[in-house]
Length: 229
Image (tube, rainbow, N blue to C red):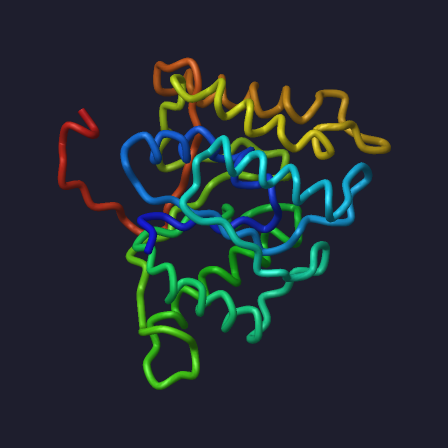
């Protein structure tokens, strides 16, 4: 059983978007897991074995309590009924009250499909009279992280201060060396630089050196005012 399950379209999405927050949650004693929906391959400089090794290295740095892969097809991820049932079964098994998933607006089709799939599977996981494994379970909230490819400044609901965890996050990010390499016709600014620029920007918005943004569709309740003062 987990406190938090982060669901990512590909290995590295969770680390790049919210690696610092994962490290903060672990430091605060939460049980945290990642479920990658695909193996992320093919990519220009990767392979299934390389990506597996990179993921294992990053998982060790993050100190995760759980990591698995649903084995769905990269580049053609779809929110099918079969995939929904498989994901709902995982949600019923790990029973995490909080799910993290990609922000709903993006230019990457896999990311958009992942969000649709996760939202639908969250609903299915609570149903009775099904052949899904485990007992019905409803995750109380979904929080959306930004692993977007769209050239647009997001409007987050809140930003997490990850300053004290920045170096560890960077170490986890660097595990994915095959994905940090410049792809053919790639960006002038490298991916690692983009991650740092984003981290600095969002840190600045809350008066910190580094930050990670998140969004919600549903209202968040507050039980501890010290958290927002």
